[in-house]
Image 1: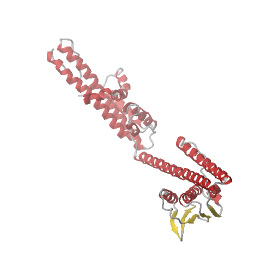
Image 2: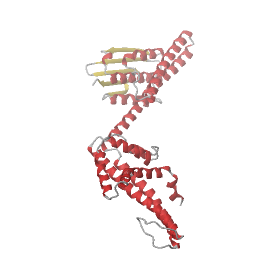
Image 3: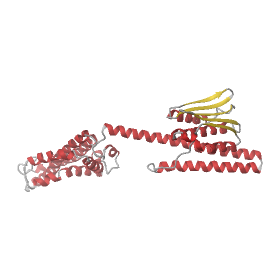
Length: 389
């Protein structure tokens, strides 16, 4: 019993009924002027050209979201489109929707009004009162048992209210829902969002991981050295790396907060000196060689190349420590080549290395390039080639 009464405790049950009544307001007003059955035929015919107007889909979609799905808070609201009609298929679906809403609204209003009148007449007939002529059925005489039919009339009224609301909502989801093209566009947008989240997570891993690694290595080296001058240099390096990481973090948070606004460009390989100096300040003996014009690289290639170099140097500092590192960056006619080599140590396969190498391979694959990582002639090698197109 409680389950049967539960819909009447929800506001959406009554807003759905209101939605159906709104559909028949203007034809009902016409009936005051001309009481004829063909009034409804004319009303139905007038809805056809109205449904061909693209903006009507927005109007009907907003009404449906507001009144049929619980003021837009219901999860069903996201399945009702409020964009204007973009194809004849959408316009056709909207015409069918308008006709169905008018028909169901007429039937629902007739039954609800007549069932209310019938309930009152049944009580009146049982106690000898006057009875009006109803459309659904006529009462013959005044019988005491007429009052026993009141619960049946009220139950039918309740079923009409709930059933018609659920029916019009199901039809709205079918006819006002997204078309196949809109579903595909929504899926592509969702995919782009997931890719953007993955990219942001990868950037945070690279940037913050690099900063923390440099800070840990510098702090440990300063403590071991016991040299005030070296300690000052180490603190300077930690400060510079920390500031750069904070800038990256602020930029990423800006992307998350305001995705529609442009943000400052990400670092590129033209900023590689900052990474090399940071690695040198951490004790690594970096031998860098650059061939070609780095400043002419396409933006995506230069940005991803910077992150790959950053992750490679971070892995060296984290797992090999202050060792000689050879960095080669070569820009040819159609390819960016990037190689980082350092002496192979027993710590290379240590914890945390898998995610960094996986990130390097993912970045290379994203641009159609390839990455080779692993031991090579006594060294640990990261070799990446990225196409410039």
